[in-house]
Structure formats: structure tokens, C-alpha cells
Image (cartoon, rainbow, N blue to C red; front, side, top):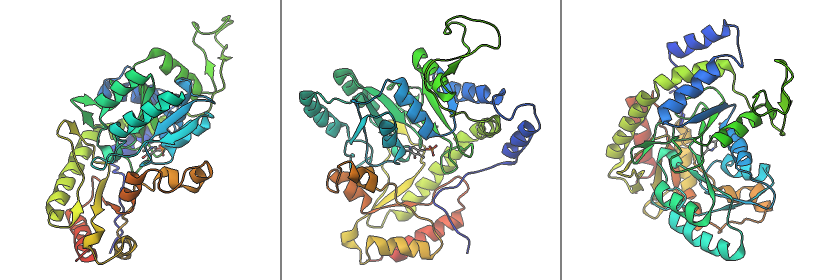
Length: 387
Ligand SMILES: *Cc1c(COP(=O)(O)O)cnc(C)c1O
């Protein structure tokens, strides 16, 4: 019996050939592949600027810095995300807070956001940045979040680590039509991969320029930006940046992966629809998909109706693991992590996210999941939750 993970990359012979070709070329890093990858992703997403970096975490960090986040500021995000969506605020010395989730989409709830903003306004603690996460690839209610951003004057970062290839009201995620910056992850479990890698997209030239400097030590060679151009060897460090660059080897893989992006999403959607049918009669809540959006189906999460089940959450989880099926929980609410509890958060602070996490299970879903493997997952789920 082979192990079925919850997510897995799909690597083709073309991917391998592209990486090998770059390995044999003059540039392993800082060559032609990175700008080519950026141009292709920007065109695909209909964004002006795209900056490749070594992870989504780095993209979130330089995105927050470019938006001016600093000590004394607030960053808000959803508790139902990977810790990186919140940590980027702390990297900048800002304070982090959370907004509870919508029980149907599991995304940050715009109604809860509106209520919290009204309270924050009276205390003068309106956030500088709200990081929204398109959880599992299902787009957030961006129209409403953008309306609130205009009303309360905060900036929006879309953490679209799950959502390259998704659409919201006919706009590709990444177009930044409803936000300042959008961030993608190319970690192997995500929709396309570069091993490690990420990207920050924006339509604002100043943000793109600042992020470009932050990605590479805060250095610029742009004649327009430097004080006194001395010669072709000349560069200036103007701000404190990092080495967050992606390599050409990784970009070559990314360029090739991009060609299969829509095919991968179609496969994910077909498998998800098959899960919908096969799980229809069980006491579960299946993933919501809005009619006006196209989810990239990064995750297929089912919510257990534990009252109707003999077994506990842990026991159901264990029965998958015992059958070599790598189910998972996305996510342990960030505010309940020990590090965040030390900052003052506690269990009970965001009850919708906590209730969700007490009964959510991510089932395996990836482009090359075979129908036999999917059947095995469904069978184990049937057995595990029989009433
Ligand atoms: C994976 C993930 C990240 C971090 O991505 P890396 O590329 O591994 O840094 C951030 N946010 C979300 C929602 C993610 O799923």
C-alpha cells in the first residue's frame, strides 16, 4: 500500500529538461530566467509588475515593508492561515491582530472585519494593512474588503499562496484589482512549484521599485535613483534589504510549471467534483465554491458533523494515518500557537475559526491523484465515520 499525501507536486519531463538546460547555461542565478518568469506570471495575472523571491514568506515581508509597515502600526489577518501571513507583521515591528472567519467560506469574514474596524476607529487602532488569504483557493469577498479599505484607509495584501490560477468575478487572482499587493507561493504542495519560491505582484510602480530593492540588499543601479552616477560599476545601497532572490534554476522550473497551471487546476476541479459526488451522503460539510469565482482547489477540506459520529476527531484522523493516507488540518488557528499566546492571544478569541479547526480534515487532492487512490480515501472516510 503506497502512501497518499494530502498534496504533491506534478513534475513533467519538460520541467526536468528546462532545469537541466539552465544548469548547463551561463547563469544559475541572476540570469534571464527570473525576468522571463516574472513577465509570464504578470501577463497571466494581468498585473503590471511581478517580483520573484525565494518564498511567499519573503514576499509578504517585503510587501509589508514597501507599504511602510513599522512599529506602532497594526496588521490584521485571518486566524485560519499558515503562520507566515501573520508573522510578516511582527517582522516589521508592528502589532498583529486577527479577524474571525466566515463559517461558509472559511475566509476572513467581511462582516466581522467591518465590526472590528468600527471599534478600532474609536480607539485609533485601525490597521495599516489587512492580509487576506484565499483559503484553499476560494477567493475572498474582495469587493466588500476593498470597500472597507477605502472607508477606513488601510492597505490590502492578498496572500494568494493557495490561489494562483483562481479567478474572482472574471479577474485573475494576482491582477491586484482589489488590493495593493498579491503574493504567491511556489512551495511543492501549492498549485505550481519552484521547490521553494514566491512572487509579489502589484500595479503600483513605487511599490514594485521598493520591493525590488528590498529583495536584493536594498541596492539599486537605477540611474534615476542614485545620487551621483560614477560609472558602470556603481551601485548604491539606499535602504536595508535582504537576499530574497529566486535563482534561475528555480525560475526555469517555474516557467515550465506555468504551462501546466490551468491543466493542473482542471484536474483538481474534476477530482473535487468527484469527491463532492462520492461524499454527498455523509454527515459532512463539503467545500463551498461561490458561483462568481473559480477556485484553484488547492485544498479539499471536509467538516465533520461530530455529533452524528461515534468516533472522535482524533480517532477519525488516526484511521486515515493508519491506512497510509496523509490527511491534514489546515489550519491550527494562528492565535492559538504558543508564540501568539505569549503575545496575549488565547483560546476562545476567534470562536468560528476554532470550531472549524476542531472538525476540519483536508483530504488528499493533487493533479496526479489517481481515481483508485481517491476511492481508497473515500472508503476509509466512510468506515471512519460510520454512525
Ligand atoms: C504556504 C503558505 C505560505 C508560505 O509560503 P512559503 O512559500 O513556504 O513561504 C504563506 N501563506 C499561506 C496561506 C500559505 O499556504
